[in-house]
Length: 417
Ligand code: EPZ
Image (cartoon, rainbow, N blue to C red):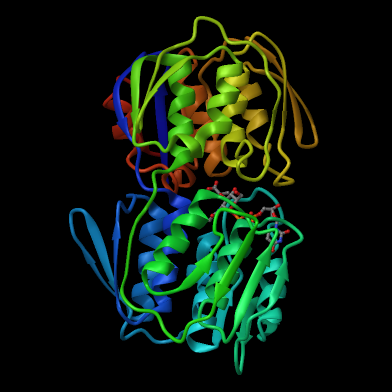
């Protein structure tokens, strides 16, 4: 096991280059299963989730070539195998192999998916959607066995605008006979990125990025090419560090409209930035004012930035209310912030955060990926040294984070526990 040590309070200046979006690539890699032709994927982030998914593809028989600017995935000779617990439990996105294998082979066998402990995270909407498309879903020995004689178009209304269910049902319908409509679909930019990839292979998918997506089933897919969009959550995390410690810190590689909710909310605190094309320049704000933050589906304030934003709110003068509305158990970072000197009262998934409080370094735990991000932001501003354990969570979603922060002046290192 490894841990991160941070000696806080250092100003950050220079440029941080944002990598490809984790929540795009974790769907794009399983999507390559849908074709037996080669796929070229640009801007693949160097994160452990990619390594894990590439292992899963290789386990199925994929040939993956790693070039400087892109990777080539060749699934011509893959076989349909059970995705065992060893793979499926280590990453939430393993569930995308359900839709992809069902689509290509009309059969998928996969143990329960894993992922951050931020709630029960059921996949009932995925499974109900598969059944609407003509599949049979069985649960046996802690795994799902999903089979179909034929997959046909269907009208699917999602009770929740679920990112995973939207993507998985696109996978399951892209080769089905007929037309599928997904109503109340998730609108996240990562979904548009995956659909762009599928359409490059010859899929006929319309409306991605809106809440109504139409998929005209095709008989087969060809070669695919895609560039992974910049990771808006990684960018938002560094932007938050910038308003607390930046000195003309440049965050390079953002798509502004993907961060509107975050930029607007941070501006509301009194933070200022210059935005020029794909770059944001940010410096430490003289004073930050308390604001209220409520997470919601895209284009609202993203749940994945709620935890690091809680840390920012500890530095805002006054009482801020932070409410997490997507997951029922995504507040485990609060007690660790309080152990560093924050003054936060928690009522279920709503936190009353009284600022501004001085944070002091201590040992804290990254209970999940974005709780880890909240600890990183806290450690960067705290006095003394902060030790963050369980940092494997962080390495799943933040590529080369120690190097990126060291290069702009942070005193941060990765050490063995
Ligand atoms: C994706 O998770 C992301 N993960 C999450 O990012 C992100 O927080 C989430 O979307 C929301 O934006 C990946 O893309 C791998 P959901 P996903 O299905 O697809 C409930 C990170 O930190 N739900 O939109 O699992 C669910 O329990 C991770 O990068 C059902 O009830 O999210 C949750 O409360 C964390 N039944 C809500 O919907 C279902 O069948 C949203 O979940 C599916 C979901």
